[in-house]
Image (cartoon, rainbow, N blue to C red; front, side, top):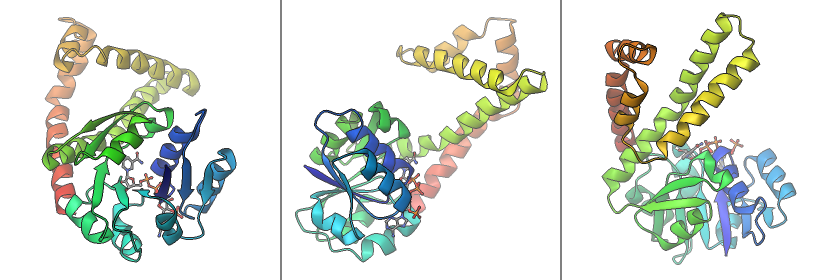
Length: 254
Ligand SMILES: NC(=O)c1ccc[n+]([C@@H]2O[C@H](COP(=O)([O-])OP(=O)(O)OC[C@H]3O[C@@H](n4cnc5c(N)ncnc54)[C@H](OP(=O)(O)O)[C@@H]3O)[C@@H](O)[C@H]2O)c1
């Protein structure tokens, strides 16, 4: 099976890396020429990866094409390509509906959306697929796990929830920055915060309710309870819900 990738940026490169790095029998992958530097780097690293002369050559050379360009250029990039009727198109673009996608890649009709995260590079992703699609699940099962969703609303809500990732890192940065202000050297501060949160990530795999984990870590009258109450009073958690709704509204109108 050959895969084509249109748009070789952060997520396109993560997908290719997961498919090929230390894999005994990696698939053939044909990359679009942009981004030239990232595409050339991947082709150099992996023997089964080639860079196509243009986007149409990607579509012509691979039955399954993964679209990893930004949503803003979906129309100009896909609109000028000729897709075969029996081709499969898998889109990672946030906010581009299946209906819009089908219009852009007609006469191809075997179309799905996915929400890959950078962890696919380590084959540790849990990738939502909508609508259920054999080729998309086969691809992303190679990169971790998949969850197939028939419901477009549920898929879009999961997509919106990924808008919280940058804020998570900014939160870690705020903690590390405060430690630095207490004269702890920056590398030591980062290392400490990274170790603390990496350890907590393990707890989230237990399947316990997050609310329960929060309660367990907030000893009555203790410092965790004090800090948590402060964030609650500051409206942080209320904003999480409001901010996510705004993201969802935006995704639904693009
Ligand atoms: N990053 C994530 O974690 C993530 C997660 C889920 C979904 N997504 C989705 O994946 C898509 C890509 O995101 P990203 O973070 O990977 O963005 P990105 O790093 O900016 O990658 C987009 C790539 O598209 C290329 N491109 C631009 N115009 C092109 C054209 N005409 N033909 C072919 N390629 C073209 C860009 O090349 P140049 O550098 O030469 O402009 C760039 O390499 C977005 O739609 C986003 O919603 C991303």
